[in-house]
Image 1 (cartoon, one colour):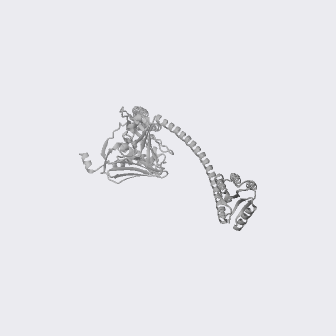
Image 2: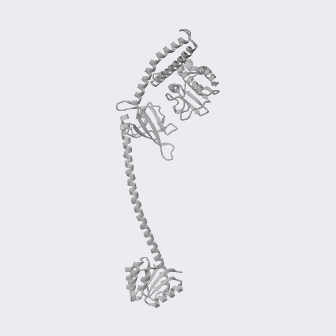
Image 3: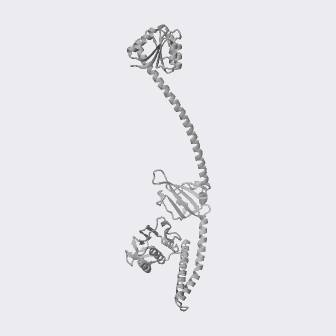
Length: 528
């Protein structure tokens, strides 16, 4: 069943009646029949047809004129022209001029007519949909042009912003007083700035491709590098500060002390760094200021020792009765003065020791001795202090007195006494302190474990620095140089010192001396 708006125009009523009958018989709905083309045009001004069927020869307006007007109103609507045999040429002309869908000669075949009606309606619908799609495409094209113009403008703005940012960044890098260096994953130089070129005496051509460790010397490097190209920051963090480094200028031969701050750059979803960026800072001026300061402190403290020693000795003469008997109040006052002077002398001596270590003027005096005996003596000296606080101070050793090591006995005792003394000072009454001494594969391991208040993790990195006094929660009244000197002494032996601590559980200070244990044959050679 066909249900569409079909307009049939013919000046003969018999023809329109025949169409009505045909449509009724075939079940075609939506037919509109006109005997006047003018009336049909007026109707089509408000009604959109799916198909127009028109006679050619009509008195008011011939079919060609009528269909031309209808085409102007509805260009997508299919049109069929009814012609007589004699009007065949005019029908063909109408097809070319107006763009008709079909022409049908009278008398027509009903089956052929019905098929053309059906196809004509489908054609109208398809053309209408096509026109809608074309309109949608035109709208989309306009919208796309708008988006394209906006995108082009946005790209230009972003490109301009990136160019500006790149110029600023390049200006900062090129005019930076600090050297800036970028390394690839294997530790070879990829890029440098002018400040880095000035430090090394080489331009970028001479530096790019070189291993980083070829241009820097003497630093306590926290990097790993090898001939097979492996390179990385040997740290739990992605940043590391390299201190006490030296860069030699290839042209002048001058050695410039520098500090280098390295950071690892990771690619997305990668565990291995893709690149490293380092900032190289010239610390020549800082080193010179430190040297002048240390020289001043060394001179001052050295000059203070003589009057302090004289004052201490004089006070001892008073106290031992060499200069006459003293009253009790006088003895107490002089004892206090003696203790204060001895504390001050201890500070002066500590400052002198720090200066000697930092300046490299202290040489270790290594001998062969039994470490167990040395530790036992240090623990016995501290027992009275521990007993005053009712602290259980014990010593354990996994070897006998026959085992000997090659080290500086005096300096090592300083470290042991300092670590054990700190444990006694920072352990509460009725506490427990364990001193452990072990030998393992030629290494000596010493540790002091207590159940005191512990040390906050944030304070641990600062404990072995100069003038570090206790923690942020509790400050000591000491010089703050004991742990610093201990680290200097242990590192001078080629060893390591560290601390492990938990708040409210206690701390454990440990040092390790490698390859210091002397076997029997070595002792015989040394003694011989």
